[in-house]
Length: 567
Ligand code: PRX
Image (cartoon, rainbow, N blue to C red; front, side, top):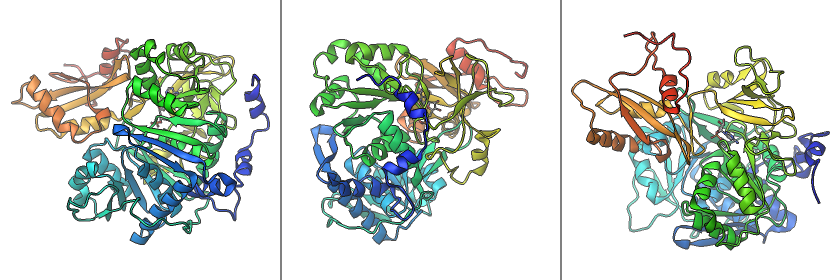
C-alpha cells in the first residue's frame, strides 16, 4: 500500500502526547531511559527477543536478548552504585563500539547518573578538556585506551575512578584504576532504578563551536519522547525489523538512534565494530538481513566509489528503508541508492543540540534528491533573516535555519556555559547555525554552516581546537584552520601556519608538527593539508580572517575585504 499522504496525516492534530501515551509515560511511573530501553521491553513480553547482534574485529560475534541487556545494565549500574556513584555524577564512556559501551549506557542511566560518551579515537588533550569541563567522576574504558587516560588523570582532581572493562590480570593497575568484567560479575537480576524525573539530566554530549572549548550539550530523560517517535516514524522501525545505525555512540546519532530509539521500541539492532570497507559493510547487511539502515553521506560516497559491481556480490534484498544524516546528502547519492537498492536514502537533518531529527524526507513523502525534506510533525522550522532575525517570507531566499523551542529532546543547557546557550536564541527562535532555502512545497535545501566549524565526514571540527594544538608547538607563531574541499569527506581540515623566527618551513618540520598535534586531537581533526605562510591575512584589529583563506581554498569570491589590514 502506498503511504502517500502519511506525512499530512501525521501533522494533522499532532501532539507529543502521542508518544507519551504509547510509552505510558506519566508521573508516578519510572521515567528512566535505561529502564525504558530494557526492563519495559521485557515486561512487554519481549525478554527473549534479540536486542543486539554484535560483530567486532576478527569476526568476534556476540548476541544479547532484551533480558540480557536488562541484566547487564543492572550489573554495571550496581557496580557503579557500590563505588558511590550517585545521581547526576558524570560518568564518561570511552570505549570502542564493544557491547560494554551500549550496556554501560543503560547502567549509568539506571542509577540516575549522567552519561558522557566520548569518541574513543580522541587524543588525550581532547579527552582532558571534556572531562575537566564536566568534572567527570568516573570513566569506563578499555585497556587499549588506558594510556591516554593515564597521561591526564593527575590533572583531573574530580576523576576518582578509571574502570577498565577488559583488564588482564597479568598487567598492573595503577592509581584510581579498577578492573570490571561483565562476564565475571554476578548478574544483578533486579536493580532499584533511580527515580529520575522527566527533567532529570541524562546524556552530556560534547560538540565543537568556532570559538572557545567544546560545549557540553545537556539532555534530559524526557528526550525519549521525541527520540522514540522520530525513530518510529522517520526510520520507520517495525516489530520485525533488523536495524543498523552505523554511527558511533561517541556522537549523538549513535545514542539517540543507535541506542535509545531502537531499544525503547524493542527493535533488534546490529553493531559492526570493524572499520569501514565496502565488502565488509555489504557482507554485514547480507549476513544479518538488515532491513533498515541509517548511515552518513561520507560512507555512502565511499560505497559509491568502491563500485557497483561490489554491490552485486551480495544479497541486499532485505533492505526496506534507508536514511542518512550528518552532512549534505548530494543528489547523486540518492539517485545511486535508487539504482542499487531500488530505494532512496532519506535525508535527515538535526544536531547534537536538537537531540532528534528535525527536518526529513518522511517515509512515503516525495523525495527530492538534494533536499533535506520538511520539518518533522510537531517541529516548527523557519528561515530567519541574518540581520533582523525575522522570519523570511519569500520562497527560495537563503536564511538561517531556526526552530521554535519546546520539543522534548531539545538541549536544556550547555554545561556551565549559560552565555553560549543564550546566544543560540534570537527573537524566541532557536538558531541552528546553518543556512538553507525553502522551496514552494516547504522542502529545505541546505546551503552551508553559518560559522567556521568544519564538517569533515559528518564530524564537526572546531578550527579553534586545532589552532590551539598547533600553537603549542614551539615553532608555530600563528595558525589558521579552514575547510578544504574533498571528494569523499566533503570537507577536510587545512592548516595555515606562520613560523617563529629561527624556524624554516620544510617537510621534516611539517611532520614533526603533525606528530605533535596527533597526540592531542582525534584523527578526524588532523589537518590533511598544511601550508606555511609568511603572514596570515588579518583585520586591522589583528583578527585572523579565516574567511579569506576559506575562499581561496574553495575558489570563491573573496567578498568584502575592507577590514583587511594594509601592509
Ligand atoms: O551543519 C549541520 C550538519 O551537522 C551539524 C550538526 O552536527 P552534530 O551536532 O555533530 O550532529 C550530527 C548528527 C545529528 C548541523 O548543524 N548536518 C547534520 N545533518 C545534516 C547536516 N548538514 C546537511 N544535511 C544534513 N542532513
